[in-house]
Length: 387
Image (cartoon, rainbow, N blue to C red):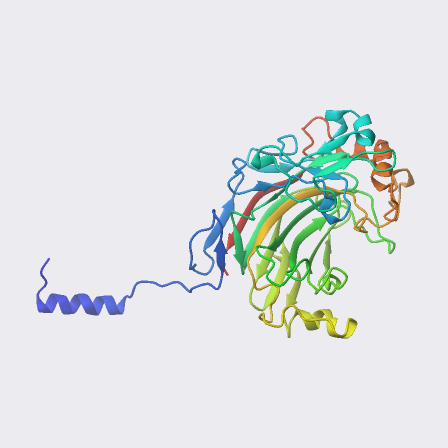
């Protein structure tokens, strides 16, 4: 097309008067096989799963007996009895190992998950995670469940993440949605950080020593950070949100939200802020590690003031059961002593004691009638937007 000088001048003037809209470039970065290539516009949707089906390209199942480092009582595995999608909802459901192996196997068998196809190989050998032999005092993990992660498919730094989910019902169930770093940039856990969007307990009737409901009516969010496992500043960032009595997080779906910026991390639910952790002068100072442990090296000295939360993290969703790290404190439910905790956290026979108490906790899991949906962590969607 040939334009006259006058027409060309009008075209240029119109172009300058109405420039092409340009987006604000986000500070968000992302990587992985399912990540959209950047750079991104602010509030651009960069990750979404509505769980019309279980996408194994996105969610890798862990296969381990390690108990999350907390001596929890479950075996995480890739099995459709424990993780499946139905009508746009992703379910993570607990089942009993003895239903497959017989009860005697728990105390006398050997469970070896070293081998198998690549998709079913052991993913974490720590804490005897790939092989266990049962005895009368030390049972093989009696529960099967699932833990999925986006470690290879999607990692991101900074952004807004929203998970619409319903918490499970059942004594000693421990659902969680959280994030771990793609790389151990600052060293082993917790030096490279951990972001816990939500953790909850499935007990309908469970209170702490102060009388506060810590079961289905409460969820918590926190950050883990510190130069070593014994120097962890998580308590300085922990926050909890309780529902009204009888309206626990297990009674319906809620939107659990993470806003992560170069200056703060904010946790919210249904657009109500639960807590905001500002970077301030850095997480070394927040943890007061220099005074608590003089002479300890600061692993984040060459990072930003947001370190260790200035690197890409991936998403994890799981349903754990029990454990001895204190997440289930040794206090009985307040109004029903017959459903008290069947193990103590210091006991070397905790898994056995838990299993022997199944007549009290198993009926609360509501396993019959609807394929255990009430005792499942239910996820409607996971979405991440650029900052």
